[in-house]
Each structure stands twice: as structure tokens, then as C-alpha cells.
Image 1: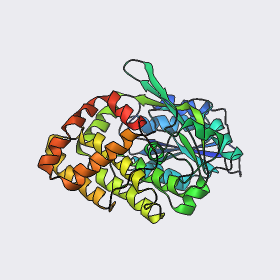
Image 2: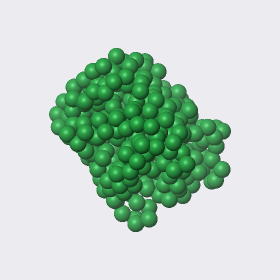
Image 3: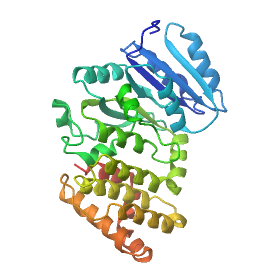
Image 4: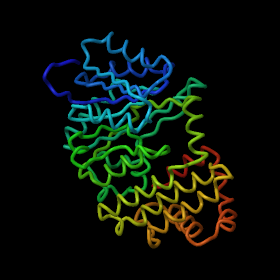
Amino acid sequence: MNTANKAPLLSVIVPVFNTEQYLEKSLNSLLSSTLKDLEIIIIDDGSTDSSPEICDKFKADNPDWNIKVIHKKNEGQSSARNLGQQKSHGKYVTFCDSDDWVEPELFSTLVSAAEENSAQAAICGIKYYNEVTKKFEYHTDSLFPSTLTKNTFNIETCKSVIRGLLDCSPCNKVYLRSFIEQHKISFDVQCNFAEDNRFWAEYFLAAERLCLVNGGFYVYRINQNRQTICTKAKKSYDSFAASMMIIRETFERHKLLDHFRGELIAFLAIQISVAYCNILSTRKKSFYKECMEVLKTCKHFSFAHEGSFAVRLHSMYIYAVFRFLPFTVGNIAMLPLQILRNSKIKKFLRRFAA
């Protein structure tokens, strides 16, 4: 609610771009939060539909709430999120995409967990709602193991670095704002695909205390527009190699590469496998060479300390293919993995990192 001269407990940052069909539901879900000490920052990223008017009306209709609406030229979701961070005043910050919505207990649950554990971030799971079938397709807890709910953890103690890196959505977490500012963590405006990777990798590797809440309180809407945009991005993967390189550099900067080299390679192997099996055939050769360069910077192969035999075998296979085989041979070696076009197999590959 709107409390004068008092910093809010939580700032909720909502980047908006042409989501008029879903925007009202998304914004109204924030008002249903059981945590009322909120600052809602809506960044209209140059929308060309009626989204700007919906944002302004939402603020006007709710004068008792601490709501800011900022209209800017279109520069992408990362730019909008970064601006929201700069304008925020909450002790904690979180993000909500404008075609998704939140369960009433999301913010109170995560903030309480962070406060009780003196954690720099609190994490929960996600529900997935299919706009076509009008059904919740599935619910997943965080990719972090549920056993971590018993204690705070960090990259050194979680024993699940691979799954931790895969859990990169910014929307199922609350973050300590002072920690973001201290470490100068931001979203990568140069990446047009998987732009969340840099932000989360920086945060995950730097944090000393993280905490986990079982259950999915953030609702991710699967809709045709989002799928179309995602498909176009995936077919080119223009920023994929740059994004993966940033993560490798983050490990090196935090002096964690030597110890977690195997975990990093296993993570890269999963990402490369999925990307390679979805990319356009006309892009495969150049993409193959980009992945070769990324793996080359890992210097040498190491097995992960964690994970199953399948994870280790997969990481060794992908590393060997992309490091030592020319494209014509490597492309043939990757044919068995074309089964990854099946979305269920893709989900399994992300999960089998346990």
C-alpha cells in the first residue's frame, strides 16, 4: 500500500510490451498479494497496442497503492528490468512478466523466508498455464533439490550447481536490493535470447545465503504470442554463445572455475544439446563453431562432482564432439540427440541433472 516517506519491503518490477490481452489480469494479481507493503513499478517498453493506457488506468484506479508507471522507447525486456531496478526503493526486488500472474501468497512467502533466514534471495517453483487448453499443464518446484529447504545454502554448499544454474527465471525469486547494487548485477541488454542467464549466474555465484521454498506460486502463461517470439529466438540463437561465455567468465571472475569446471561443462552441454536440436539447419555450422569456442575456453574437461552417471556421460560426449570433431562429423554425431525436439525429452534433460 501507499505509505509516505517509508521504503517499501518489496519492489515488484513489471516490464510491459504489447500484452494488452493479459496485462489487466497480471497487474490485478499483484493487488491480491497477502503482502501489502509493495512498490509496483511498471515499465512500458514502447508498447504500440493499448498497454500504455491500461498501465495508466491501473495507477489511476488504485491511488492507495504505491504504483509507478514509466513509459520509455522500446529497448527490450532487459533494458526495462534494469530501469525498474534503478527506480526501485524496496528492501527486496522481484519481477513479474506482464502476461503472467502471481498467487496471493507468493510475495509474503518468499519475503518471509528471506527475512527469517537472513538470505540474499529466496526461491520457489513455477506453475505453467496453457492458454490454449485453459489448463495448468504442470507444476514444478524449483530445480534446486527440495532437501535444501532445511537450511540456507550457496554455490559451495548446495551440491546442485547444474540445476541451480538452470533455474534462471528471475520471476520465482525475491532478491536483496542492496546486494544487487553492491555487486552491480544487471540484465544483459546485448542478449536477445536467454537474457536471464547472466543476471542469475552473477547472483548465484556471489550469494552467501540463499533459501528455498517448496511449491509453485508464480504462474507462467504459455500463449501463442510468447511461443512465436521464443521460437524465432531459438531458431537463430544469435546471443547463445555470448550468454554462455558470460557465465563461464563469471565462474572465472569469482575464482570458482577450477573447482566447478565439471559442473559448468555439464550445464553448457545441456544447453548446447537443446539449442543444437532446435536451431535452423542454415545456422548450424556457424553455431557449431561458436559452441566450439565456448567449450575451448573451459581449457580442459572435468567430470562434475554432482549428478548421475547419465549427466557425466552426456557432458563428456558433448565436450568431445564440439571440441575435437569438425562440423561435418560432429553434425552426424549429434543426430541421435534430435529426439530432443520432443518437449518432454527436453524437460527430462533439464531434470536429469540431479
